Image 1 (cartoon, rainbow, N blue to C red):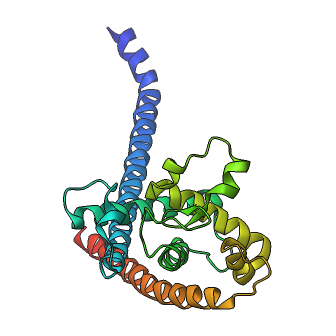
Image 2: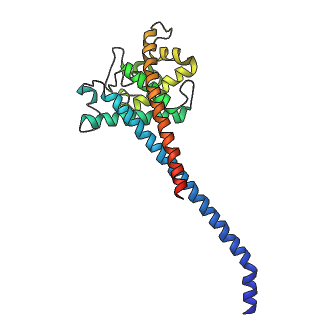
Image 3: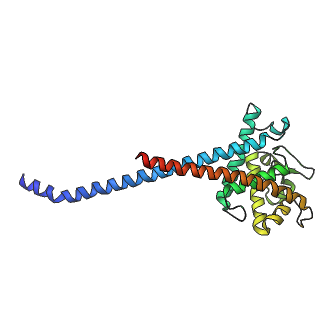
Length: 235
């Protein structure tokens, strides 16, 4: 009995160290999960706020019934909500992949630029088609891009999410190579920037949307900061 007690006593520091290590790991995992959850909630709130903004922008435009015919939803409000969510989701994915470039160094700046271009190109009509064959919200030049991407179908480009995804990628590529002004000209099919009125109108709308979205982002940051302070006081 004494021998067993002596052996157990010699193992006690090891057992205590093991439990302490496990406790530290669990504590770290708990804190990490809490941080991930908090970040997830912040992203969800930012996403929903941007969706509400885009929904308001689209709702103030006149959209004929044919524009929303293929958009899922039973009512016009539901269709506009789906359209807004597709736009914001596509912009977030492109920004995550492409990263910041001047002057669109924040996700809300890219969203503002996409809204300005879509508003000018199609007036937010997902089924818009130009005489030259450009289709969808961003008026992607389908005849041109079909030659480079054989698997690209016109049906895909009529879907708002895919249209914004593809169109925003093309737009950012042009801006990276030529800068904002010449990049917008190239996107519009005016490589020599002979029609600056298009660029001027897009930039005016871009600055307006960027200002509004930046205010919303600042407000969300303030809410997150104050919520953190309240949480620390509660502890």
